[in-house]
Amino acid sequence: MIQKNTVERLKKKQVRIRKKIVGTPERPRLAVFRSSKNAYAQIIDDLNGKTLVSSSSIEKTIKEELKSKKPVEIYKLVGVAVAKKAIEKNITQVVFDRSGYLYHGRVKALAEGAREGGLKF
Image (tube, helix red, strand yellow):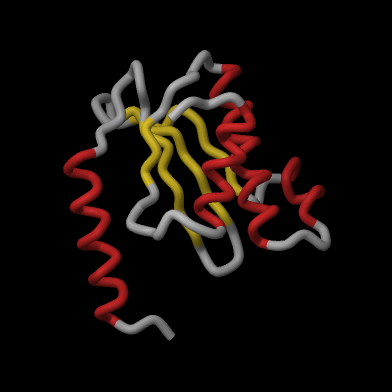
């Protein structure tokens, strides 16, 4: 069970990070969300308030590849998938938003997968 102060600490970190990181049409924000079972990534234009590209581990194309893979490998696949979709929409540069999570393990794997897919940040 997640304690209330853990959630509050994460929200404070997110607010602090969002003050500094803003997605523009030229350089949108790559936001990461971790759940206990799935990985989610979105590329967002904050000025227009639109999600340009999204990918997650519950998509059919990724779900087929997930059998007997470790969580870090799953996050890397999600990173590659979101990068491929972004390249199709002519998005090459993004700002990475780790959403208050520490940059190691699964979040780092997603970032590396996005870089391998062709995104620059």
